[in-house]
Image (cartoon, rainbow, N blue to C red; front, side, top):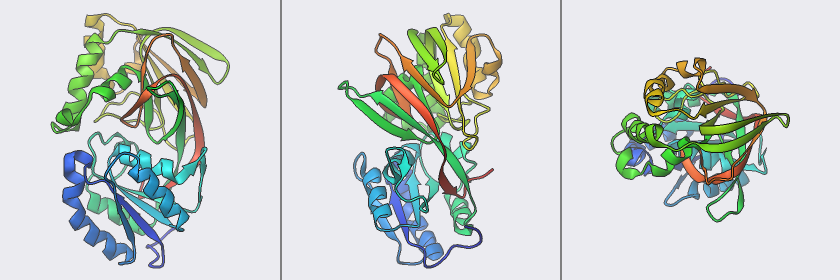
Length: 317
């Protein structure tokens, strides 16, 4: 779709008032007036109150024939919404677009997609109808009860130190702001996390194994408040970028960690880079796994890309 929004469009809005330590809730009264001004008073608003509410609301919206679902929240809210729009890796309605008014903590997804920092400016982009078709990642893992579970992710997933960081970042840290919250916990874990032996099969052929601090799979190029772990990743190229973090001593970690914020770490020896369409990660140890800043469980984990899966209105080039 191009041009200005169609007033006859069926628009559903999913709001997570708790996102960004309550920032989404504080902004929503003003944003609601603006959204209704763009799309008319007939839009339907869903407010989330507990985990997976956004998934249920998105599924209901698609079933009701939504043309556009606007998500007001953070990376986790966006991920929940996307999972409600899909079933077994397929869109319930390929004609339904996603719009994002980012009000969350980490902001990695917003940066990867080139969203405007100001939700009001981003709303204007959504209103014009311009957008970008992006890939999604599909992740099958073991939850904390040992049961096989599946999750779609939009920006990234990690096992090892990244999963442990997300597991530890709580509301108390998030109130410090995205860069400080993720940075503080990341530094602490980056300097102390014990490497795990992992075996990773890439595209069913190459095997990479050894002691790794973590394995990061990027659909986008920014995560966790500004880290560029997969700096060359593009969410619309049909590939996933994979970065392995080898075991390092304390001083080597101290020297290499700051490079993650610039993307220069991929040029150094402790990091291995690959570009794949699917991979499987296994370990005899307990290794934490996360996706889009949400902790889900552990290994074994299968990941694959779903090319050209979703149109995001207002996403930049």
